[in-house]
Length: 215
Length: 231
Image (tube, rainbow over the protein chains, first blue to last red):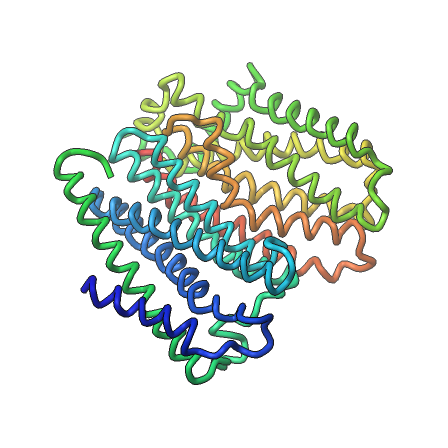
């Protein structure tokens, strides 16, 4: 599995820079960032969903392995959120002239960053594993419940410069041919990379749990 | 069993009265929130003052400042309802004596009363010191009250979480901020409109957001609290 994912991503990188043409309406080659920025943001949201799912599972089962799976999703989600944020600000600098301008998308990604960071700080502040698992599961679920507000509230309060999202209001896919192929390949590659990293860290944490060291 | 025969709401009322009596004895929570808010307000007033902001910018900037002051001030005192139970080691007795939902409701009621008192002092003082006279005064106070309702409900559950963790003081705003951010932004936006807009057409949307935020966090809090309380 590992070599396939690495070869796949290598092909995606080559395609992103050499095979795919730059999209029209963007400054220079800046549109190429879509192949890395959007999949990273997608994985960041996916990780949030997974941590929410395992948090609910933990509260029902009180099984520490479920808590561990939620925590691993958050740790890796944080990594992909940082990648999405940094690549997004590079794009913002090229397109809009400033790294940061509090676009609604930038606000939502920072919110995710804050939630992930707060979750990890909370985990560090509790010593007892079972109590830590309960508190962090409740926090993750509570954050998850208030997230839709963000999706609903922010776009109504602030004006956005962000390009249309992949799934946009018109329900149209505004990418064509090579760009779309590279984009979808990258999306699949990032998801597979995340699955690989997630399984690897879960295996490591399971060993630590078996040894009696906390997740 | 005495517990089975005690209705849930009267349990909550008993917890509220117990905490109210204890709070009236020391007044730690309300004093710390009011003093913190007044200090911040004084700082804002000294550094910016009422006349440094261009009149056109006043509604947006002052509404945001008011929310920032109320958010940080509330973070100094709202956790006390749970932290004091853990510190005085009375939480275990309370766990045995009362239903978790009744505890949440009782503690929430006290926090609501505290924040109502704080808002009643801080908001008029803010208006006086910053020369801030909203166009629609009733809507302005109504939105503030609804914003503080949502803030208090969400903060009460976070307070229960942090009372069981170490490093409580710093943890409270860190955990509360991402949860409260949509509420704070929506409230600040609605306040600035209540201060400056000629009509009240924004009220429908603002009320929708604020009421549903309070409703959803209230029911989520009621369900999730038991997991925290028994952790």
